Length: 61
Image 1 (cartoon, rainbow, N blue to C red):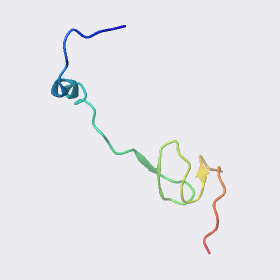
Image 2 (image 1 turned 90 degrees about the horizontal axis):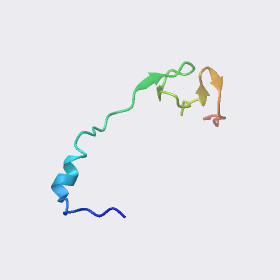
Image 3 (image 1 turned 135 degrees about the vertical axis):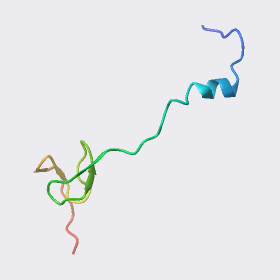
Image 4 (image 1 turned 180 degrees about the vertical axis):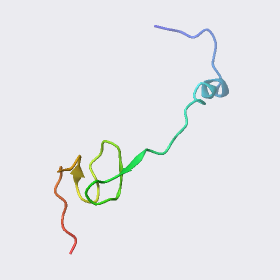
């Protein structure tokens, strides 16, 4: 089993992780209803994906 020669401090450990930047997902518009949708995801408003009905959504009445 691997055994480190010396302890790595929290500060040194955390320095390895500084290159990660949280970014907002890229959004597109739904071709059916026009709402904002993440790429490669079903539209949460109407249930369409790539111009076809992917999931059934309840009608708001």
